[in-house]
Length: 211
Image (spheres, one colour):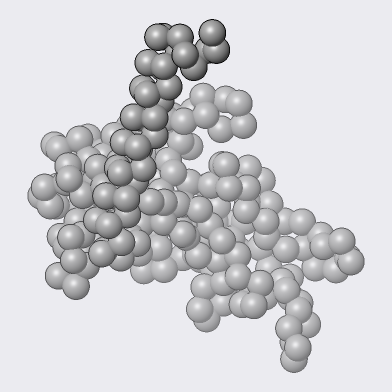
C-alpha cells in the first residue's frame, strides 16, 4: 500500500492541500485590498498591510506621540488607507527613538514592539524595526559616474544611518575608483534617515515600503 493510500497519509495530503488553497485565497484577498491603496511607509512595528488596515482605527495617537513629527496621515486619495499613519522620509524620517513612543500610544494593536532575527542574533526595539528597505539609484547617486559627470566621493547616507557598516557600507567597485553605498537589506530598518540626508537634489537612495 502506498503512503498516499494510507488513511493518515490521505488525511495529511488533504490538510496540506487545504492550507495551500487557504493561503492562496488569503494572498489574493490581501493583494486585492492592498493594491487599491498607495504603498505607504508605515510607522515602526506596523503589522503587515492588510492586518494593519484592519486594526488601525485612524485615531492619530501614534502621530501625536511622535516627538519628531515624523508621522503623517494619508489623504482621502489614498483609498482604503485614508487617515492611516505613514512616514515620508524625504520630508521627515523616523529617528528610531529608543522607546519608540508611537507603539505604546497605539490602542488598537496595529503597532507592536518589533522583534526579529538579524544575522543570527535575536533583536528587539529600534534595531529590529523593519518598515522597509533602502534602495540606491545608480542613475542619481553621486558616487556613480554618468556620461557627462565623473563619480564624486559622498557617504552622507552612511553618516546618517543609525547602524553604519551594518545596514549601509561603502564598497569600492571591482574596477576601482570611488566607494559606493551598498545596503545590507537584512539589517536595514527602513527609517529613511539616509533618504532624508541624501545630497542629491532628488534623493538617490529611497526607502521601499514593506508590504
